[in-house]
Image: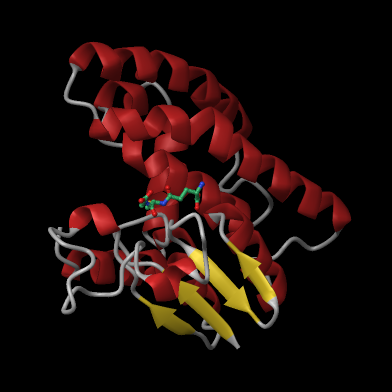
Length: 209
Ligand SMILES: N[C@@H](CCC(=O)N[C@@H](CS)C(=O)NCC(=O)O)C(=O)O
């Protein structure tokens, strides 16, 4: 039995999009970030990252977390890789080489993309935003070169596209960056046009901001 913990307005969006792609049977527990609640310990507070029940699953107190039988995973991209392999089919790596490539894209997303894309979304300081955009441009140059003449990172949409697209999403409002990387911008639009992304996005939009 698969249980995914984490609300849509969090990095749980990644495995939730993947679960929508696969149609895998699962239970979803929409744990919310404690810092978004006035009193996370109140008796009527929704289950949150500081709730004892959730801390028993992930002692770090972060979402997402996945329980699959005896296996507990607490990193969103590791959860995506696991669920894709578990589901099989076109989303999953087809062999050892493609698995290694997917792992490489996961680490690329976590280290070359997300640390710079997130501050672009969150910072109110234009100097910080531009400094992070300049750093993100290195990763984007790599993506742009790879995606020029290709529809997907591999020969079809896989978990690698989903992971990189979700980490890059935070920066997609930065118009000059997107305009400077047209193959990447088109690829991101293709990823986000998928019905499973749209379903995830609709559920996310229905959650309180
Ligand atoms: N590297 C982790 C980061 C998880 C993370 O930072 N989750 C945030 C929500 S997106 C969280 O739970 N924040 C609550 C907190 O840190 O108290 C992953 O990718 O899963």
